[in-house]
Image 1 (cartoon, rainbow, N blue to C red):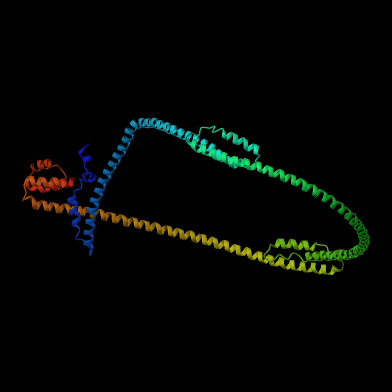
Image 2: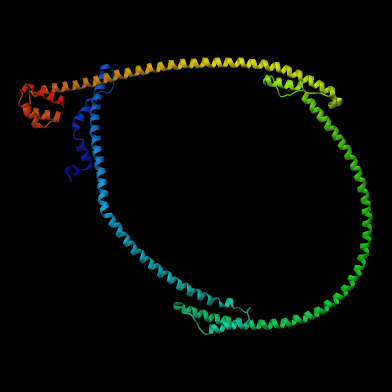
Length: 468
């Protein structure tokens, strides 16, 4: 690793910007501290010159910094690419070994899971059989047949038929408890069957007694039903006679009502027919008055067509009967109204045409005026832009001349300073000062100073600086 790379980041940054002399920059920044306010044109020029000198130095420093940053970016990208290349050499082998190791770990984990599952199944089977043994007294209760309970007791008395392993003691205790409970259930089942047999005999005797009583009750009921049926038959015959007479009376009333309703309906239909005929004639008379929706703002052609249609409409006496005079009057009124409306519509149409022509002429004037105004605004805008460009060019030229004048004054001031100092310094001192000012190696400057007269040393130093 080179010496520059071994330095701290801040030291490397200072080294990259070493061409910018910090002491010279500090002195340049301090030179204008006395400027606090502008009171006249000379003060403005002095402030502008100082600012431009600072700006020139700042731009130079930013250019150096930008070049250093670009170099650092390229270096960083190169490091990343080299890092990826070197990692790519070993990472595939690392991944392959990781796959082998994971396969081993997965196999061990699968074995553990298989053993745990087998153990869980073994314990589950034992617990299942043990629970079944413990629930025998709940299943084989005294409600079952004694023979069935006895079969289960004989099976359990033969001992355990399954290897319960570590649960053997618990299974044996459950077997003994089941035997005790099942034997008690067996005794209770025998007693239950004996009670059921006695109850069955009692129910048979009771059923015989109830059958005899039921036969007697049936005989009595049969006699009562026969007497009731005779009474009901007489009542039905009486009701049938009353129903017949009622139907005859209702038939007479319905016939009378039907005749009355037919007469009323015929009268109503005649009245309705008359009303419909009158409504139709009134509607035709309304048509003879012409359309009422037309106004003076409608088309004269449309109104004229309606007038001609109304004039050709026939009015026959046989069609209107007693309303014939009203129909003729309605037709005359309608024709007169449409004729007046036709004249008003023609006048309105002419007025609208005149207004339309005036609007078109006005729109054309406004368009021409807008074009003239746009042309005036365009010329004014172009004139403003030209004036602004001229002022900007003048200001740029003034800034350039001010910067050149400031540089010239600075150079003149340095020449004066060197001329004042040159008489008191040796050739070696002069060479060292010139080398610091213009950034040239000390040996080169000393060799050139040795070739010229003492009084031209100051001129030489200024020439070297201006060449730089």
